[in-house]
Length: 158
Image (cartoon, rainbow, N blue to C red):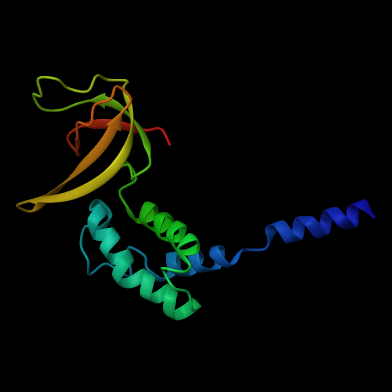
């Protein structure tokens, strides 16, 4: 009897949730390949957020009859996972804990290597044909000095 119960519980645990089904659909529908007409999307956080708002949310709402306002707790984790999958893997996302490796430039009071902080926001800024990510960080030492990626070197902790 115990083995039957274990097997049933194991099968129940392995069944995909509604959220898993939607995430799989979104990951398969909106890939780097299908969005290839939108260059450099994996480098620009704001562009990915815009795509999530303009493509993913309408797709999820229409396909699964959900509403971003009422079903926020279902939809937002899906969008976050999609953005993390599409975004440049060496760059952090809001909420990530990071550690300073080396601050570039000649700031008179740089963040000391080894200092940890939590990413608050990211702003993509275009300079000619290239982009920088300006990352707002709440550092453990109380400072809020921005990172500029790819120039500053950091390590994502979580």
